[in-house]
Length: 153
Image 1 (tube, one colour):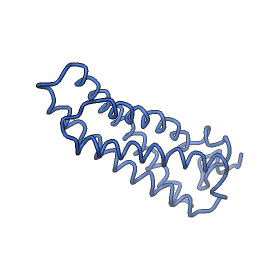
Image 2 (cartoon, rainbow, N blue to C red):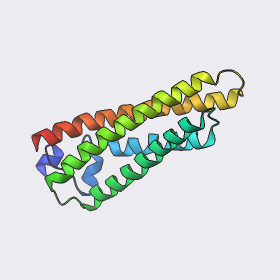
Image 3 (tube, rainbow, N blue to C red):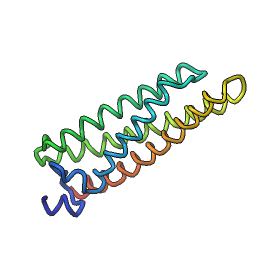
Image 4 (cartoon, one colour):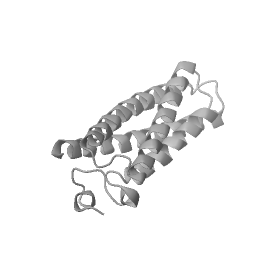
């Protein structure tokens, strides 16, 4: 493991050091919580189809992009180039913004469905909102530390 990658320096980790460096360790949690949001939104009944579509787009897009980045980092596809540091910071900023908008819209839709829906549907949507906010927090933290890494590169 390179010294800069071990200390959270300005380079991206390669191989399995992705799982022991911060903020890249957050990929695993983004993957898990993003997948939970995707599953819960896909199985829930949201009264506003446009909101459900946006939340599905955000969760699927971020899940696929996070998986692709994680695989690229593990196989060392970035080659240690600084342009990947920039792309990592940009992606996590966009993902954080997308997830924040999706979380707020899903919370609004859940609040509006208190009346006229079954208890099960309401609780599925509450779970989706909670996991969406956790995913938002993870992406925001990853974005902040990616921006710090980008600035020092």
